[in-house]
Length: 50
Image 1 (cartoon, rainbow, N blue to C red):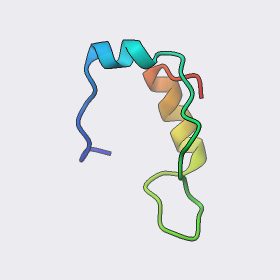
Image 2: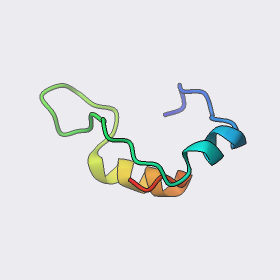
Image 3: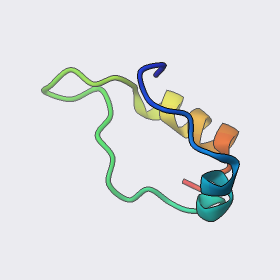
Image 4: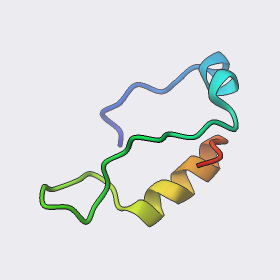
C-alpha cells in the first residue's frame, strides 16, 4: 500500500484501539487491494483493535 501517505504518530495515537467498521476486502465481485486476513494482520501491526 505504498501509494498512501504515512499517518503521523499523533494520528496513530488518536486511532489506537479503534475498529474500522466499514471495509472492502477480497474476495469480492470487484478486485480489492487486500484480503481480510492480511488486513487483520495489518490492523494489529498499527495498533487497531479490529
